[in-house]
Image 1 (cartoon, rainbow, N blue to C red):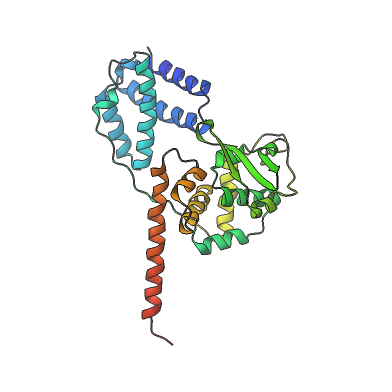
Image 2 (cartoon, one colour; image 1 turned 90 degrees about the horizontal axis):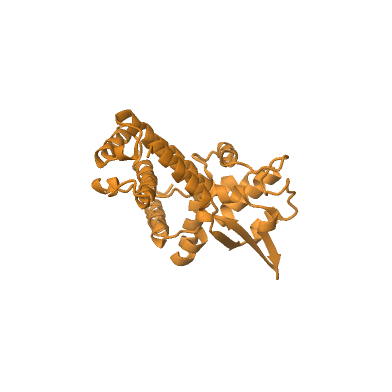
Length: 287
């Protein structure tokens, strides 16, 4: 079996089982990098994927300066392909089992500070961007689910507003719409099917959302200003207000509560900063 054909079949399989579009893009990018490396070193065959060649692949990726998070993501995507290939008997054993695990990166989330939040929320924005900012801030949704939201995903009944979205792995996610978000959405004029779409009816792409959020950062002097930092901000604020970690995990749509636990480190760091500020105030000379 040609390696390039096996990779193509794996990606088609991922599409058939409705993997998230971002997941499929990551598969394509990472596996094509692996394909180029293997073919340059040997022949275009699945049998050329060995432990030694995988080890050499990751060594060269590391030498190029890629972060641990990127390397771990590539390893995870390659592992998915290899497990799929094992079920089709392309390999007798998983070549990746011959490698030691990569260390995990420990980059903490970066929520917006209270001053940054205040400047961002004070910006006067066009109606679409006003609604987008409210959704990012009050729901913690990722960019892809937000870009796919439709008018019918807003449910109103019994005095309650709820938002239905599709998250990672096509899982349906239903969350309450707080009054501040209701206000931003009330009377909002839709352009076609999607909440955030163009005149031709197509939804905004990820890059379109990111460009708008970046422009807010320029206007509010907040760098970097990214959609995902709104998600980190909501999780951290909820934790600091005493919301149980299990409830935050459910709101964030995390498959494993250990993913949510990282926000406890951010919250502790914020508390340390507050205590240090208080200490400086006590010891600064009075005018």
